[in-house]
Length: 197
Image 1 (cartoon, rainbow, N blue to C red):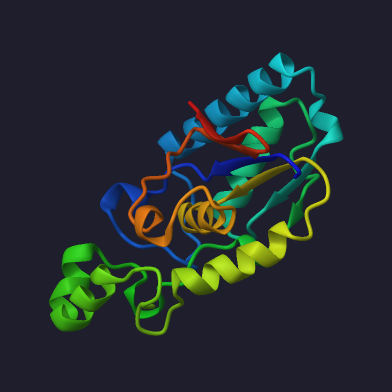
Image 2: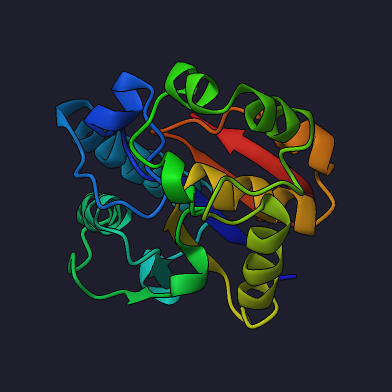
């Protein structure tokens, strides 16, 4: 089982405002840039502790700008050329369709009956025009099955939850509302799942 060093992108203003971003390209804010650099320093410390070379790892990010900016700050903290990494669309955030840009109270006001149905089964019920976590889990599983070497992945909260379920670390019920920290490193490996930061 390859080790995955997983980092969620740093904060954006929409994160701070409680707005669903999904596939929208919202840039990192100042705190988000600091969180990304901090995650890079945490990763550097883990690699030093384990006698690993950052240059020997694969690096892949979601194609969304907030993930790419985070990756470039992480690579800078590792003293690697910032732009030398791959992107993979299977790591992009869950699509929230018509709900993108909205807050939870706004979504609830638009359609309280549907909102309640999704709240009761977030894994299987997609936002209007969006995708379900089950669909995200399928695409993240497809990505993971092609990973052959230890990899640094920078992506999103939704894809982190999907990977946790795909690898058996969480259930759909436990993962659906699980907070995924920014400025932290999640290590998926043979020994389980460990969060640093």
